[in-house]
Length: 479
Ligand SMILES: Nc1ncnc2c1ncn2[C@@H]1O[C@H](COP(=O)(O)OP(=O)(O)O)[C@@H](O)[C@H]1O
Ligand SMILES: O=P(O)(O)O[C@H]1O[C@H](CO)[C@@H](O[C@H]2O[C@H](CO)[C@@H](O)[C@H](O)[C@H]2O)[C@H](O)[C@H]1O
Image 1 (cartoon, rainbow, N blue to C red):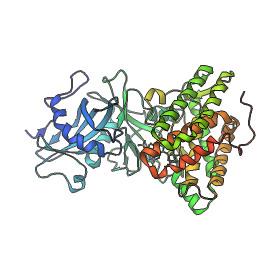
Image 2 (cartoon, rainbow, N blue to C red):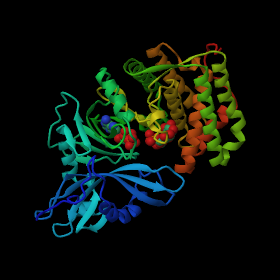
Image 3 (spheres, rainbow, N blue to C red):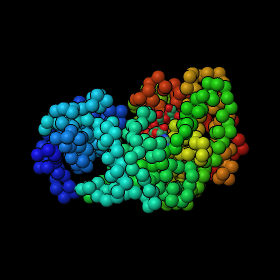
Image 4 (cartoon, rainbow, N blue to C red):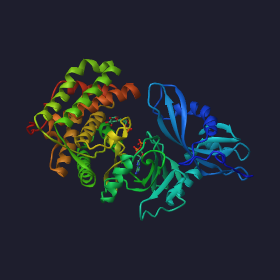
């Protein structure tokens, strides 16, 4: 027998339970390997157990001629004091006998031998990454995996794959500078907003996004399909806004025309989202609830980061003012938004100008919350924070940093107003609440991930705690 089918005795389908044998073999390998992966969100807490959600053999390993197998796994990871998270793995399987793992793949081994096979990260193997593209080109089901191509996508075969080297929370493969496949790592039931929003925008004719060409989902496992990966058009020769802004700061160049164009692009995306997807009007109760959730996030962040505590009382006034706004009968328009907009999420392209990517929202928030309509000022606040980050990335208290940030923040708002008719600064209570909420999130993010960067959001915390921005342009009455 030349074909080694791992799952011959244990194939998982939507109707059959996963075989414990497979999990038993994989568990010790994964316990070591998972915490070392950048996308693994549960670092710092030991893994207490695994649950196999599904295992699908997309390609059997042929031990006779030495061709690799491709195994798709959804795995529940249990850790103390937390709900289990579900992760998506794409595992390559190759025989231990010659021809063994190619030198280029050795660094990407997960472990083995397991049933005589070495297990490795499949997307590093061009043959397996190519097989996945082939699977996306031909719609249909393989057990609990459903592959869909956008009608008329016409995805060609044989595009050379390369793994993206970008710092990211998921894993992406670029195919011949034509497509980029993002494989989501942490999986939740329901449509991933990155697919949901970019598909809605593409179908509405927006040029401000990378249009999806194909995607795949897990079906029959949860109460609704879970998005697993999206193949989008690749934007060649693009540069991300963060890199461009840093260069402008370092070279002393004026970046305000780009900031203004980015404000216009953001407003265009918001307008298209409001047309394409459900909107809502937030009234007293919802606004008070919003303010209360922001205050809760502040409390949680202050518990985790002592540096925040001296500013807590003053920062709370931003959320109190928001609640008062609701109490006075003001309503706030809400719609689907990007949810985690910053300069790194904007690509400057030669053909389309600014394009926004990664509509997933803040990965730490639960999916239903990320899919809820929100005031579009949430994205504006994210981008305003990003200009402040760019100005202070070398030295948070550099002379001139505050002025650079203010000029570019203002240019972004002017651009937003050009395209939408409304300057976000005309709603100072709303924008201060959202900017405060974002700065608090960033304090926690930096404390956990990049402690050396903590002074950047802390400088914003000090500014926001001091009260409403004295440099703000004429305001509309908030009552
Ligand atoms: N359509 C695209 N064209 C070109 N580059 C892209 C495209 N989509 C993403 N990228 C690049 O990949 C990086 C990571 O993408 P992103 O969607 O932010 O991933 P993640 O959600 O995993 O962080 C981006 O910063 C960008 O450099
Ligand atoms: O990369 P993600 O989209 O997952 O976002 C997370 O990481 C970002 C950093 O990479 C972080 O953004 C913060 O740092 C940026 C500079 O590196 C800055 O431009 C952003 O304004 C600032 O918020 C983001 O908050 C976090 O969710």
